[in-house]
Image 1 (tube, helix red, strand yellow):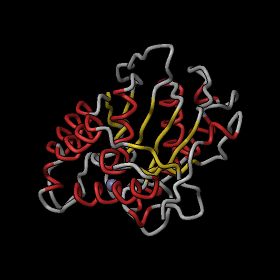
Image 2 (image 1 turned 90 degrees about the horizontal axis):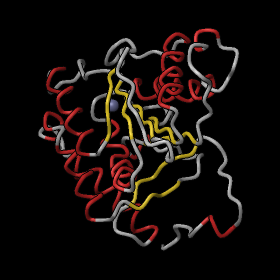
Image 3 (image 1 turned 90 degrees about the vertical axis):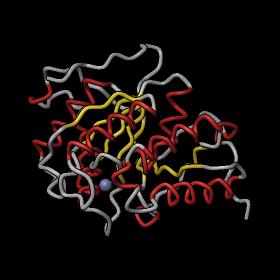
Length: 245
Ligand SMILES: [Zn+2]
């Protein structure tokens, strides 16, 4: 059993799942930086060590992920769901993720989108996290009975690339343009040196964020995709729409 991270009781933690060691940083690292700098705890669950990658060894990738999580103010753990390029949805694995949700008790959960035509590990993990969040709140699941049930606040999908953005779901654009947030995000992406030396991932993610930022009139923004309808007390809380162009 991994050591249980402890979080301040007044603020529910953010729990982010990544199929590969760099997915969370590339897909939504700026959002994490903004939340942790605002006082929210964040915990990463990474479901492989990048062992099928062309660049970087599993040991390197693990070290990079640990360093990146630290730069984003997050704690991190690794779970085995079959290995890089071999993540396949199963009930046993879904329950493993549900147990983590019950242990960490997050308000917000971030997971890779389930859009087709991207790395199959992302899709399999996104589906399992979605189903795990459901099972975590069901009282009668016998494999989970040792842990108190937990209903998360929201599941939000992140897209590692533009192609993984789920078109049918409404986008929520999160402003990540505060200099300290942008700096922490960029540093966390740069921590994955084995990947960023091979391809221009940082430029890709910052350009995507700039495009989203322009749409809503801020410097940079990251798109997240809520799995469920959003609920507000009044129209006021909806804020502004991104319709600058
Ligand atoms: Zn990935």
